[in-house]
Image 1 (cartoon, helix red, strand yellow):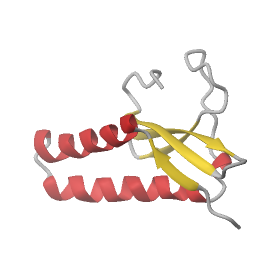
Image 2: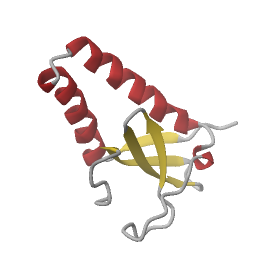
Image 3: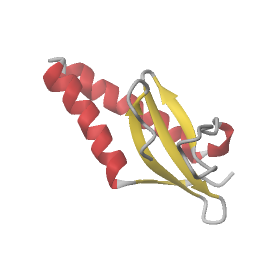
Image 4: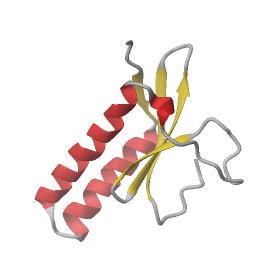
Length: 103
């Protein structure tokens, strides 16, 4: 089975860095920040195989109907796939309780 290439938007990269910074600096848990980041990225890496197995985002706020989400603990990774090019576009990584509808 061919893998999908995973590509991160600038926003998604910034989201991951902000999550890591928050855990490290605000919660003062630098060791946990590193572990959380690695586990979050490992979860996203699961999208290399069968990314469309995860739930579509069903909301009136998101106009595109091909946005899906994968969940790691409190964070949602929102992404879209391109079947022809076999690419996964990671759009945002947001806390589940924040306003993530700005995808």
